[in-house]
Image 1 (spheres, helix red, strand yellow):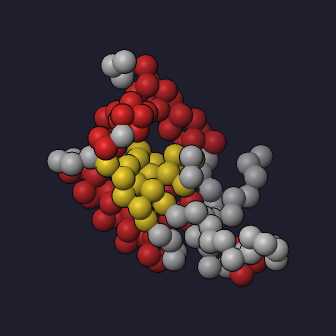
Image 2 (cartoon, rainbow, N blue to C red):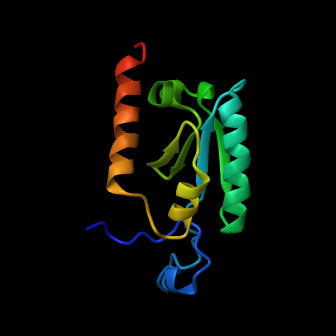
Length: 128
């Protein structure tokens, strides 16, 4: 059974970090990996920003073509949405899945396996 996930941008006081030296640290925001000229990226960034704002999340947009490692990792999968190193969406972004994740419901193991297979196939196809 999947473990409950604390949303990355929760406004729930129960989800706040425990008191201590890192208690003022904010949870990680969302990173959207994109590339210039990608219409799905343009639409995805707008959707992620709008949805993230409703949950108090920050959004960072990164062009994969600015970094060879990101270009190799994400290839033609952009847009890709990640929280830290965890990819939570790729390609056409689902607002429903994004809201489920941000509300703390997490993502199904089946969907996470699907994302992992997409990333794996992209790496296999990338020119070296």
